[in-house]
Length: 66
Image 1 (cartoon, rainbow, N blue to C red):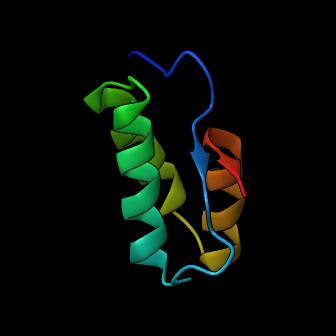
Image 2 (image 1 turned 90 degrees about the horizontal axis):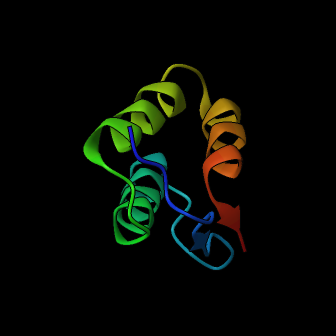
Image 3 (image 1 turned 90 degrees about the vertical axis):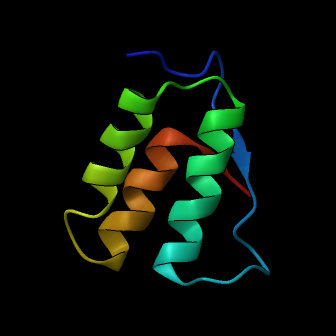
């Protein structure tokens, strides 16, 4: 599993707050940051294993949120 060298930045303020939109933006940022499929799949699995607040908490562990 390959993680990005640094946490990618993802802008959430003034963006669509829909959970699927957030997942897509974070997935793209992780991919562009150099993460492999296994790392991205782990993020997606963790982020979707709870409610919306859990999604946001997991997202902030994987990327820097603006």
